[in-house]
Length: 111
DNA sequence: TCAATGACTGAAA
DNA sequence: ATTTCAGCCATTG
Image (tube, rainbow, N blue to C red; front, side, top):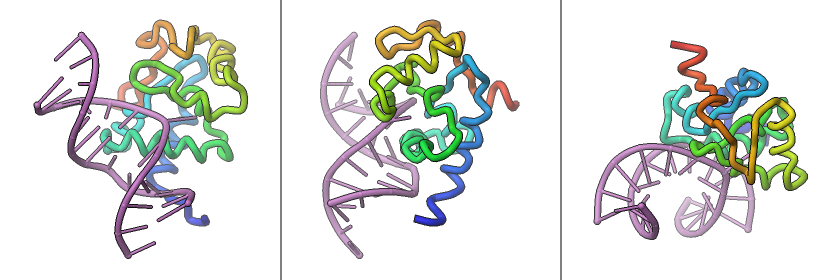
């Protein structure tokens, strides 16, 4: 793979990198910010390749605040630990006070 | 090339 | 209320 997929993925990485420490966002929020809120799956898929990027994928969860992608990390609770390390409370893969730590790119960044 | 899958989400039954 | 369906589109078999 060379040109990868670009555009969508690239933007996903870009936004993910903008996520402040101690905050989280959802795949749908990113997709929505990219103008394709129905492409949330692609966002998650993009995260699949985020390993080689500097993308803090652990800050991206589904709309429920559930760490659905934790299985993609090395350890079993690595993702959870990373989040807790940033001040985000996580219990059983579920982010506590999700709406409080939720970071919406099109809302915080933008406009 | 076609078919199946996936770190999701919202609407419909 | 819960369960099912459809759409998004790149990746993989």
